[in-house]
Image 1: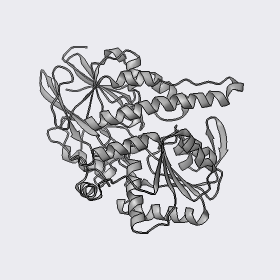
Image 2: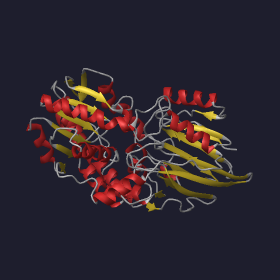
Image 3: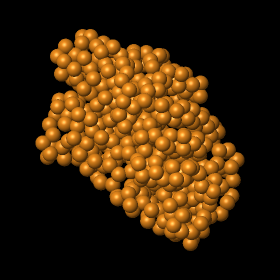
Image 4: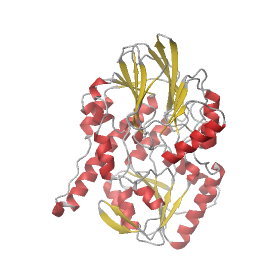
Length: 469
């Protein structure tokens, strides 16, 4: 390959939602845009996560859009396998990634230990992808940069972060690349926030874009109005209170947990729901909530939330919520009777303490599992959402008698209309690449763009490479 070639190849989240990994090659140097973990069925996920379609040691720079595990979760494995490049991210993303990656390592080690124990007689074992030392190795390469600050990840490429409005610290990356035919602007959105959110300011499309790489998670559907969130959550709480049941909310520790807490406080303050114990059972969520409080005055938060935070002083600290850190505190919930509400990670039910709450409560027909985020194909969360009456947790089968409900209201991803509006405003002159979406969602968004007259829209396959003219 010539040193002056500009290419983009797709190594994850191409025809699927999780595991974002995109490789930009410019002037003979490579820039990895995100290094996410694929989340799905254990055997399929393990194979995809352990396989890099490029040499980790060949990467010259890493740019991280945000700290969700499906975008940052394989950084420790990348550095374990020889990468030595700097990782560029916003300060909040770098801080949050430190918590997320250490937690991911602990969860993998804990899940493997538990799985291997209960399957010892069958001689079935699993191994974690990496450990906490590998996570520390990766974290040592972070170089935090503020929004709108110019930086040069590799020679000939000037970059800066723009607010993506997805989660705290999330960014779009604008890359201006020198080529023999002139400068080319590539915009990578990472995960794009919706136009209406509870906490964050909405993203604005930059101008002069040549190539746009944009997510398509909800490219085939619209979100429920955010105003409906309070009423629907109140309905679930009232029913659980009347039936003496437990509400299990598998929640992403980053953003979703804080949004739910924010709405719960409004419901309690307005006396719209009966009082019941609320537990946030995730050490990571506790730590992340502390980071939210630390950054609550940042410009990326919506003005209405900043106003509320100034008045309240501690917008996520409520007397009736118990934040649990220890394993003993978590296990003690199994012996407590409802009604109660338990918020626990992970959001797709693929690891962490929520698995133990599910295996102890799926059998109760007065209990409710409330799904409040996207559930990728193959995950336990998706199986519950699809109505399966028997599911496996840690390899053991459990019958599902609990109610399973989904609230799409909380999604922090742009929906179909948001994506269309953003792409039309950005006006990519040379091409648009749709990533981070199931085939149906990408196809629907591609068709909608064609109907709007947007040309050169591509749906890259896993491993596909494109030359950017």
